Amino acid sequence: MTEYVRYSVVIPVFNEEAVIQETYQHLKQVMNRTDASYELVFVNDGSRDNSAAIIQGFSAKDERVKLINFSRNFGHQIAITAGMDYASGDAVVVIDADLQDPPELIPEMIAKWKEGYDVVYAKRTERKGETFFKKQTAHLFYRILQASTDIVIPVDTGDFRLMDRKVCDEMSRLTEKNRFVRGLVSWVGFRQTAVEYVRDERAAGETKYPLKKMLKLSMDGITSFSIKPLKLATYLGGALSVSGLAYLMVIIYLKLFTVSTVAGWNGIAIMQLFFSGFILIILGLVGEYIGRIYDESKGRPLYIVRDCHGMKKKERRIKRIV
Image (cartoon, rainbow, N blue to C red):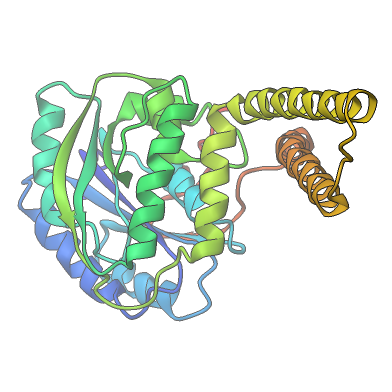
């Protein structure tokens, strides 16, 4: 294999032994049809099953397969970042290992790239095999994110996309810890376009984004690109304060100028609980931003690589720009 690589495919992996063989075969078939040099960069994000051993077996037989093993689980977005750091192709494709995103879309992305686009992202027109709750919450999240940020983050898109080398180089300069990769790709700019597709069910295994992780990713997306939640808290706090003052004026008026009594200590208790809850929510929101400042101030690396397979020594260095 020559050192020159035309296309890199980055595949983050976490406990995917049930599907990884099929993923490898599928990607290899698609990339062989491009008639260009390519590499498959698997990033093992601290898997506890046999995923790493299986991929290492691929690498032993296929020099186009490269494996990066993290020292522990650092998270899906960090695994994508590491794969982009180590990829050496002129164009880099990011795709999950579960085959929900069809590798057959990659040639169409490449065609758009050859037309002059620097980023080609896949936009979902339908999501098969997902619950009504997940579909609706995902739909809501993308709309809230779009309304909250000053940059255009395409709705109904995931991390499945192709990026030009210069985009990846710029991404390497971004060092924030709580990463939302699809948002960062939009932030760096360049010419971007979409290709549409229907997202299939997982080929095997379980989802790696349960509700807890989805909520964290949503919070990372919103807080990384907007301070509007803090501004909204200010506006709501002001509105509630004015409402409280108006209610106080009503009470004083009734006390001084009418024979009516202010009934309903239950109502007062409810209002107190409401205001207390609102204050705690605002404190929690401020805490989210402060926590992210704290994470950034520690200056720790985004990830630690335990070992690599299928790479030459000069390829094993961490290429992150600081």
